[in-house]
Length: 114
Image 1 (cartoon, rainbow, N blue to C red):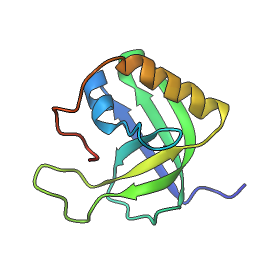
Image 2: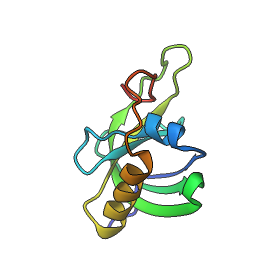
Image 3: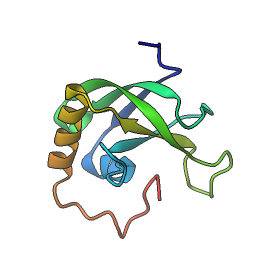
């Protein structure tokens, strides 16, 4: 297996920040990770994800599926969308994220993605 091209760390302090980064419309799920790195879509990534509300950390590998503009709108963050793999660790994290988010409705709030 090749070494991932991108190594990132992201911490979600509460469920609202997690909901704003969650990308459920991507197959296997994905997270927006703030970064100044400018990878290419399709690059592999290693991400250390901390869910502070659950006091858990997960190390996952994934794929860059989205790159925010270099000059985002005012108040927006520069970052990337990392799609989870189809492995047991990723599936466990996706399950914990969806359980944690429950029925939170972020459609009325600005998210980090769309």
